[in-house]
Length: 228
Image 1 (cartoon, rainbow, N blue to C red):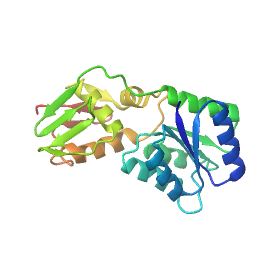
Image 2 (cartoon, rainbow, N blue to C red):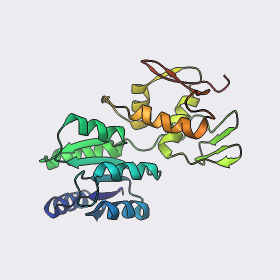
Image 3 (tube, helix red, strand yellow):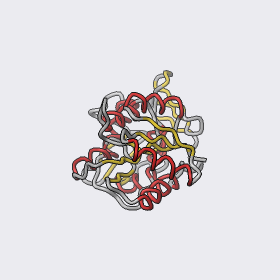
């Protein structure tokens, strides 16, 4: 049973979303403020977060950023009255997985929730470990070390690095990563891949501004070179 955290300050919407998700068999938790949402995400470890952008104490964008900064790899479906494309792109760039605008069709909303959850985790096949320079990564245990010290990668970052490491020297496009790691079938115009690569470089590269291992291929994507 998937666990879903619903973050919404409008009681009528919150109640309707909660009741319908529970009728579909999901375990549902609720929060009406940003701080309550962050605390619930830490304690409950939801599989998916339904996130309103306009809350009384903080922006949903700030909540999303904090969740990702703290390593949460929960799927996030943004539910908001903001319809401007710039807001949608910003949410996707911060790590949202889908975006539903109010007013919304309940049938479509539930279908989107199920579609996101169907992506599921990546299969545990392929390489199990990887070493390059002073970095050691165990993809089975989700552990990474640099110069013997643990570095904190999110599950998403492990999956990105694993896919790149399984294709050494090959140019991997952004859409390929969105498909293989995020599970997208339609590819939005988003910098979310670039943002994740940027953070990954900060953790594994000695000089992130001049990377040795995770290289950019301008206009195309990225290439992993374990032995430059």
